[in-house]
Length: 379
Image 1 (cartoon, rainbow, N blue to C red):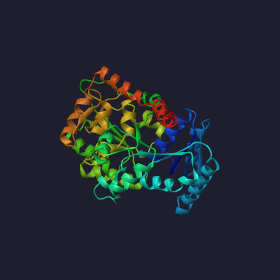
Image 2: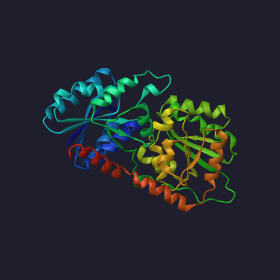
Image 3: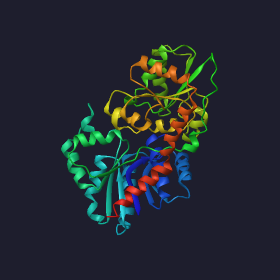
Image 4: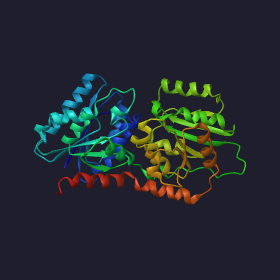
């Protein structure tokens, strides 16, 4: 079967969305699917890095140089033209937004043998998110009646969908994946009785709903021997300025090591390794509580380092009990969890965490993904 991922990607590994999609579909291609992606790029070397990563797999990218609206349109035209050339074959379109779903349904008469599946991500149901441009609930009800299936990216999404809608299309729950072999190399230092410093680490984007400020609020409550190592953001001056502002606001100038953007294949060895605790803050919003499938959670859990996360269904329905240290969004509670995790010498806890992470390897995700797609042809 040919799979067309109908969403224009920014073809640069600086994008967490691109990283997730490229990894997902590279592994899925190994299950016998012929994958087609599309997108634009403005950095030749970054695009070459992506091509190197997918080399040898049944996956191609229809790419257009430039980030303009015309470039994106050119990429989409090439994508649809390629799909039309194969329209007599069994095709599966996968989208990740209402707008893209509507668009492919508009063209569906050109593809008599096509499946249409929609992935659910952080802003999948904008009518539930305050201060967002909203599509009505009725719009989604109509859409769900026309598509073939849904791909939920966290168990916590299921209850929300069942509470909101009387009927749903066929669906499968497929949380994000992790390259366990890459992150298993990261370990915490041997704990001393009176360590001179403890390194706590965050890697990821700085989007407002992720509540990065919670880390700085907790740091203000911790002793001076706690040092924050942080990497990520967009890798530009805006991200650097944001971290500097938080550092100055909470008077942490001598305690924050900001490393900018770090290549995904270097995060485990260059940033996570040597940390005492890994951090996953989240905000008081529906994206954090129910709709995110935090890629960093899976990566952290594949390491040999204790993890502290905000305790939401999006997290605890994956971690279970006695693996990740869970806390509320209250800074004092998050700081307490960091202190507890930094003293953790429970190797069995780490083993339980690693076992759960292994279940979410990209290989295992691809196996479940393949089974779901094939189920539409099994009657």
